[in-house]
Image (cartoon, rainbow, N blue to C red; front, side, top):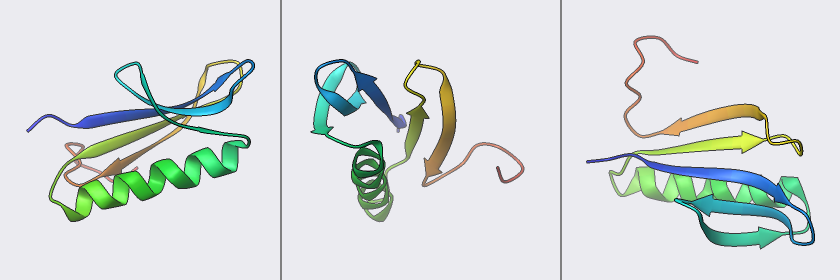
Length: 78
């Protein structure tokens, strides 16, 4: 099964957006709220046996951090 990849990105005029394959899943006024929402989505997918990845971006679009839910193909944690 393919992994679902969600991104938390900043969009001018909208705030912080949780996206999946270019589709907006949710919009939040703060980055913290967007991250909490996306983490809940990742945990819910993991509970259903699905793999998910969360990529959190800085306001300039660069990657801040990533989280993996479910099976992690890497051989070491991180």
